Image (cartoon, rainbow, N blue to C red; front, side):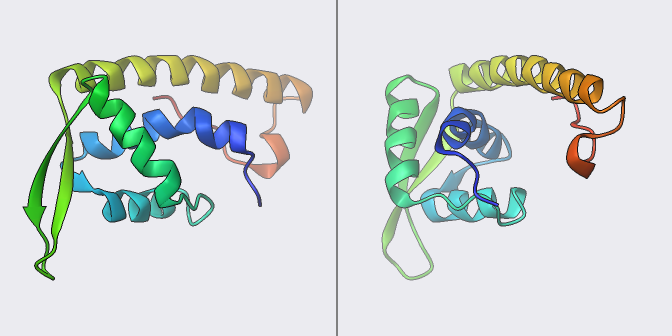
Length: 124
């Protein structure tokens, strides 16, 4: 299934904040985690992730530092800042409202069963 660019873009910030809420990470590992969390349905590129990380850093939601990798090459590690924690909590609240509304409209449309055989969406 191809997920539309608008939906991918809308979910990108809460996805990255959520991944960093799990702990410090670096670009390639974040890309791998997105794929893992989506069952391989979302395949982000470097060109999508790094501008987002830099924007979150400019907003003060993410902090970074350089560290070494097993190969010896330096890599930038990202972590949530205190304002990033608050931004993540707000994103979760907003997405819970959207998720609930979508679930209701889909349930209303198909007589209370799950939309297109998909399981019910959980809360935030």
